[in-house]
Amino acid sequence: MSDNQKHGLQGKVALVTGAARGQGRAHAIALAAAGADIIASDICAPASDSITYPAATPDELAETVRGVEAHGRKVLAREVDVRDDAGLRALVADGVEQFGRLDVVVANAGVLGWGRLWELTDEQWDTVIDVNLTGTWRTIRATVPAMIEAGNGGSIVIVSSSAGLKATPGNGHYAASKYGLVALTNTLALEAGKHGIRVNSIHPYSVDTPMIEPKVMAEIFKEHPDYLHAFPPMPLHPSNFMTPEQVADVVVWLAGDGSGVLSGVQIPVDKGALKY
Ligand SMILES: NC(=O)c1ccc[n+]([C@@H]2O[C@H](COP(=O)([O-])OP(=O)(O)OC[C@H]3O[C@@H](n4cnc5c(N)ncnc54)[C@H](O)[C@@H]3O)[C@@H](O)[C@H]2O)c1
Image (spheres, rainbow, N blue to C red):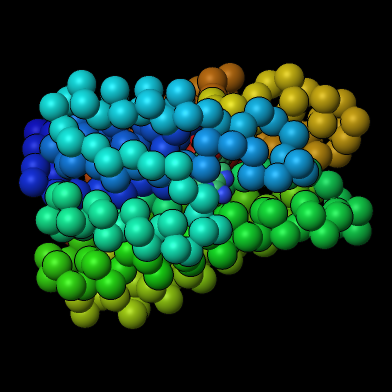
């Protein structure tokens, strides 16, 4: 991490959704390491019966809190579902009251499901679209007015996916939600730019988190080898998944002034995989 990244967020406040584990936890801790106080939220429960990998827990959110505090930063952590508009608004209001401002938003909460488009149930479709797409819009709606009000500009990082730039078989509802986030990102970049608020999306590929837990993935790919063939190896160190911390380095850079001229940009975080 460069000095600019290390010290670039002193005195700033960052909100991260889906912060109990995985990438969200890494983002919260890395932003704290760079100097920001943190508002961390997570559902800490299953988003729906249609999601087949294990859900995050309250203990995991508490672990994120310890990680932030280890860097000497303050943290407000709360169990909030991004589908819960009132919960999100209350979290933002309480966070701004405690910390005085809001500068950075990382809209990271998301769920992944599997099934061909003609086989998906209403519950599978609705869960993925409601959490990933509508939940991100709700996060934007709850946070942007507070950023405008504070008058300090800021940076919003929307966590999409490689599936938001290139479709893959077996998760069309997920791809639809993540492509939709590109539209939210670019629209908001146009709308919020005059307030000094930058908005960019990141598009990770194969990050080592419970969402793509190897046993669950192995079963899906055993049943549907055609899904697997659509996932190319990563040109850079192909055998290794990315770590959440490697993605967090990109998020910290996007949050800080080092990326101050970027807005409305889609950044693959994929070790080159999308070039196939
Ligand atoms: N792991 C990957 O390879 C990968 C690749 C591309 C994009 N992504 C995206 O990265 C983001 C983070 O995922 P991850 O890999 O850390 O997986 P993860 O499952 O470990 O983390 C996702 C977090 O979001 C939370 N969450 C789920 N539904 C929620 C809701 N309704 N309200 C609030 N919180 C909710 C979960 O409880 C969990 O803590 C997601 O948006 C995901 O789609 C992941």
